[in-house]
Image (cartoon, rainbow, N blue to C red; front, side, top):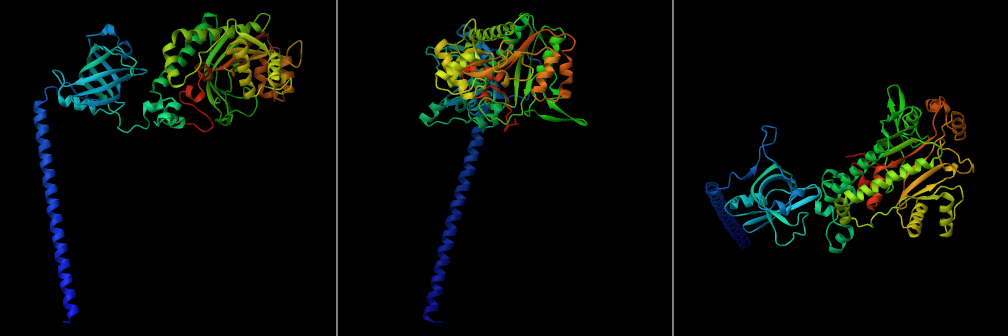
Length: 533
């Protein structure tokens, strides 16, 4: 063998030896690692066994069996909002969600939430709670539902971060009733953070689409809870006020044979071997009820509009609060009745929903809603004069554009200090065929809109109650008479003079609270781009 060959072989052997040494070292390390792991597991198991033996509180916490109505417990659960200093030193049971938890040494602080109310709770190692119980409480996932037995204690210093600031709970038992998954699609504290605050402090805020995609979580926030409780109040006040005025609540069909408002913005649905439409308004049926001597009617129900409008104030399905009534001699009797109903709603919200208003204001600050008694009524020509004075160019018979509506709202607020007003005597050309013309000026009509914070919330009018005039107006608007035959026929057998209007519930709530998007006040909004959840 040559000198080079011998040298090569030696190098190869040395390399092999080095590799086998490396391999040995690796094996040794792995063996040590495995031994350590086994030791650790044995230690943990031993600890767990001894802790289980030592855990005197093991019956005071845990994951409860799924509630399948196995038993009837004679146990009264206290509401979080009722936890006041008067309940101090009482032992109570409570069911709530874990809003946040924070372990600190031998204790764990929880914030327990129920709708828009929350309270601080404490689990601390002592006579009633073991180390294991504290550890269990600290590991309960956010949004889980728990039952707790706790002693109510007064606190010396107010707990600013909770709605119940004067008391805290000292937990003696805690059971998980329904466990949440650990990873939430959005954090509730991020979802209620005011936009500006999040940007300034570099903290997260949640955009609207994420909120709406995860609406069930978003509806748990204090802001959403407050919005929809206030919305429920609007419906209740609307019903109560009108019932007290002698109105009858009616239900009208939503599947109809002809477009209720005419025009193209109507949803068509297949109806056996033919087509039908989703009602754009209960208009025709309200009027039929007046012709049928119900005198004053109202209804609360869904309204459908196939408008491809992706704005802050348009929905394809919304809740209509509709009113129709016979009057004696002048349609202003109708305006007075509707404006008084709105004023009663505003007063009811102001007097009974301050908690909700303040809760929403924390995230979306706005000026308190102002209104006058009696309600301010302006004629269309007066509004045009105000706009002309402000530099707006528009014709006498032009409809108001959205920017002009908002500008007019600002001008009215400056001049009259009200957020709510009526605009009367609209040009006939911009109103539907069933609107009664003004007897003194054929250019105008006996119609009106109502505005909140410069945005329209109601459109209404005296209706044409004479079959002959109604036919003429329909022909003028090029409407197929065959399609509205049943409607026109309703007026052939004597019909009282009448008028009414339709209000959008979601808009009323949005504008009363000073919010900027109608999707915030629609529980599961429908718009041209959203059909879920």
